[in-house]
Length: 248
Image 1 (cartoon, helix red, strand yellow):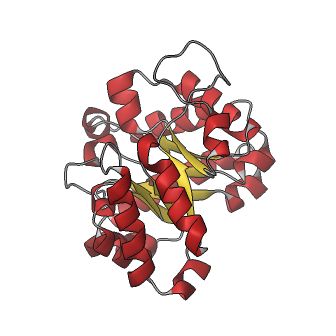
Image 2 (image 1 turned 90 degrees about the horizontal axis):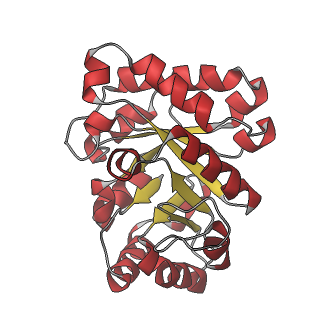
C-alpha cells in the first residue's frame, strides 16, 4: 500500500502523519502489508528520520526522479540523492507527470533503468484517458506503455518492481474503475509482462490507483491480480490511510 501525497504536506505535517500511523496501526499489520509513504522531496528526510527512529516497518518512496546521475538539470533530483536519504521506492510515469510535465514512455523507461542502477524499486504507472476509455483503446494504450516502459529491463528486475494501473480519468475525480474492470486491465498487464518472463509475471506486484478509499479497497483487493493500491487523496488523512492499510 503506497501513499502518494503529491504536492501536499510540509515536513512537520509529514512527521505528524507518521506519528499517527504509529499510534493507529498495530505493529503486526506491517508484517502482512508492505507500506510505502511517498512525501514531497522537502519532507523525505524528516519522514525517513521519524521512521528510522522508531523502527517502523514503513518504506519511504519519492514521487519522481531524473534519469541522469548529475548535471545541469535545475530543479531535478537524481536517484543517488534519493538513495542517500534512505529512499527505497520511486514513483515513475505517474499520469500527472505524463499529462502536465511531458513525461513520455521513453523517459519512463530511462528512469526505470536509472532506478535499478541505484537499487531503487520503481513504481511504474500506466493508464488511459477518458477519451481512450470511451474509444475502447484501454488495452492498446496500457499494453504499449508497459512494453515501452520495460524495454531493456531484465526479467529479474521486473520481478522486483511494482506496476501501477492508474486510469487517468479516475485520478482525483472521485470516479473509480469497478473492481472487475480494474482486474481486467491488471490481468492484461500481467499478460504483457508474461511476454518477457513467466516468473516475472508471477512475482511483479501490480497496484490499482485512482480514487482508492476505505469504501472500495476491500472489493479491489479481492480480485486475484490486484496486489495493492497507490493511494492519492485518501492517503493525506492518516486515519483513512490507516484503515486502508488494515483492510484485511
